[in-house]
Length: 148
Image (cartoon, rainbow, N blue to C red; front, side, top):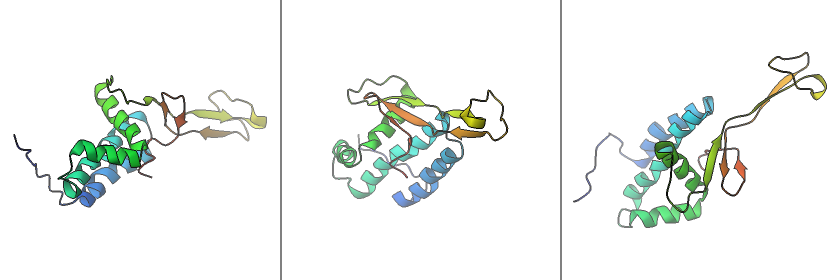
């Protein structure tokens, strides 16, 4: 059966980028939590298919994806987040993402002492970003590193 194109009104990959990918990325930047990370990852990952359809439709999609992933390996992390957010369990042998780690918050009081749920005089709040952990044991502070 031949593929059927569905018209959502996007006329180019650039228009899809502007109207679908960027707004979800902006939402992620405002609320960098797991839910918004998954929501932003979906259109960002799917832009590959838009690029393929518009620029390389004669090349097999799997080959196109493999070439893109070779050029930007971090996109594989994005794929793992998208598919993991949908299925939870992934059976591909090339899955590298172990998990998404929530942002951390540490409250530092005077003289670098821990202040429990309260700000002490001269204290400050230090936060870390949402990050991903890979099977290799490394963490990366920007889930959307290929988009930035």
